[in-house]
Amino acid sequence: MKKYLLPLLFLSLPLALVAQQDPMSLYSDFYDGVKSISSIVWDDHTNIATVKLDNENFEVTAVNDQLQKKWSSSFAGSVMTTERFKDKIIVIAATEHSTVKGNGNTYVAYLIDPTNGKQLLQKEVYHGDDTYMEVPMIFTGDGSFVKICIRQTGFTRQMHVGLLGALSIDKYTSQLNETRQLNAITLNDKLDAENNLKLPVPAGTVISMCANIRGDIFISWMNGQGIKVDKYADGSATPAKELNADVAFVADDGMILAEQLRMVASATNPDVIYYGTTYANQDNDIELGVGKLDFTTGKKSFVSEAFDRNHVKALEKSFVAINKKTDDVDLGSRRGLHIRYLGEAGGILIATVTSQYTETASYGAWNVENSVLVNGYDENLGIRFQQILPANYKIPNRFIPIAYHHTQNKFYVIGNEKTGINTVTGIYGCLDLASGKWEKMQALSKKHISSFGFANGYATMWFGNSFAVSYFSTKGFNNTSFNVALQQNEY
Figure 1 (spheres, rainbow, N blue to C red):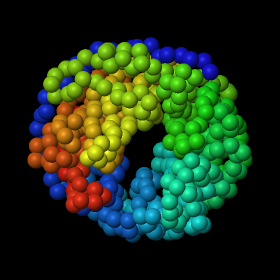
Figure 2: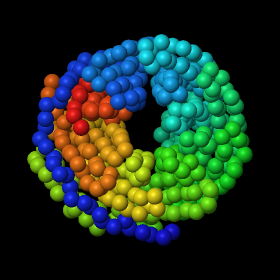
Figure 3: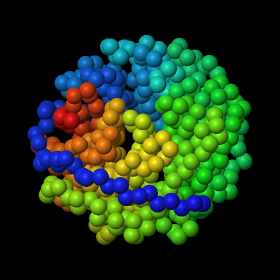
Figure 4: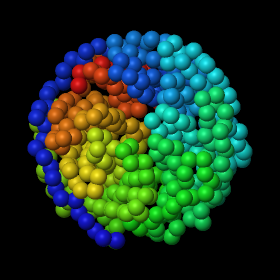
């Protein structure tokens, strides 16, 4: 494999990194004692929040740019995803969930009127065998279709006694990596299945899937050390074309392959997909590999960036601290570096990398995540910029999702920055894609918010002229339910 180190193109850091400023408004008791929240942008003035109340019930809530709940509707099930489907909202949920077995393999879909939250349709859209754990992936492209792609693993849905003994970690991951069958279901606007395809299971190990705006499906899989990608045209159960990715690595016995590679179809050319992965190279350094596959021409391109000691030090040294509100940049443990995000923004491919690891001490285990490396590539995978958001935290029990969002020429990132022992605040950066420079960076206020609250990226709301950060703070001693405050800020 050709080794190509991306040049250091650190452009001058922030035009301004300001001190904490007061938020525009605060909804201090947005929700109380919930499991999780996720949010999608509906338009410049409205976001749709999906709130998991418990394992059997959830709410869908429309929130406007004044932080008002326009409507809120309750539904049954363990919610999996909420998306736009044409001019309606579609929510897909498992009909049952247990702490031991996870989600069941029967799914129900709800079609919701976005103007008032009323349920328009409810149908069972998939009924699977409950013997094995199944992994669904749901694609909607630009909102014109709904595809549910389901991979049945070899891991049984039962209590696994002695997981670290009789059933070793290696066996556990081997069963999760196994694919017994693949299904692809396309729903119409009546929530009926237009087709229910059984896709062939390749001889290797299925890694991941993505879909383009036409509804074509791309499936990546590993055979030996090589990665192949098959394209399935919309409605077809036969692969139309197969391309080999220009990356090879040996999978560790305990590696869950589905976590190792990200794929995204180009929004401008549906026959192009990008992929990103991190792996140990021949020098045993973690390496980021980013590739492009064109299923029309068969052309491929690939670049890599090895995070050896000297390169990581050079990256950190290139960062210029602006004020005392942020720590110096720290990319953390080189062994913990992993790709976290891959997506297009304003004609630029963005890949982000952070280090995650766990520290164990006599007083418990602490999850650590360090600064966010943001790489921007042109359509030929030439490096446009490298920037870093100086986020760093160490808290018990969880890793905190990072928020990513883009408009036509801006890319936004929100992470968490430590402020004390077990306390953090949100840190926000706005990257100008034309110049490759941070346009704005600031530590967000924690005024009237629990000192132990953290900014949850999945629940961030993005409006035309503002954004709202959801601060989660644990409720009680079980650390599985949260009180949520919604804080509105200016871009």
